[in-house]
Length: 183
Image 1 (tube, rainbow, N blue to C red):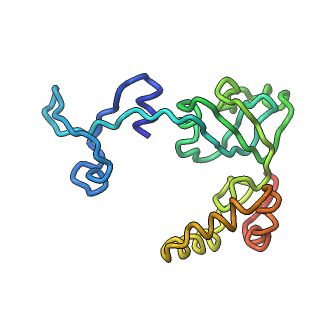
Image 2: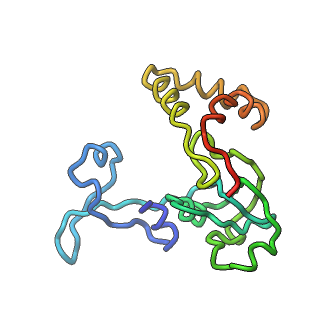
């Protein structure tokens, strides 16, 4: 997140104390330095500028004005930091629906390049309040990963499929486990 924030404010890096003394910091090979103000040890989190971000939202209009409910993790930050943004959405609604409460639009179309209506597009993760995460599917993925067979999962669930509908057909029993509803 710090790297995305650095990109937004056009900074070379964001200083922070996060991860100091951890093995994670060692593996990232980020530089540390002393604060010129407090002399505390800080980490320089370098700027991150993604080429493309793909985010899934509950609803948007055809222009890409998005309304994201609940916790949006780093979705907004990622969208605002990326060169191109593809939004998949549970439902494309008429623009008029967004005009009645403009403050609910938390990602405006100025940041969005492409909109694709894709119900269940966040599976196996969640899209509140439409459906929850698919715990059993995620556990299955974790087991496959632990066995070093992640490539098999990717082949079966992504690269061997022609369309998203093929994916939904493949996981249809999984999808039945999650709560799917119209808010």
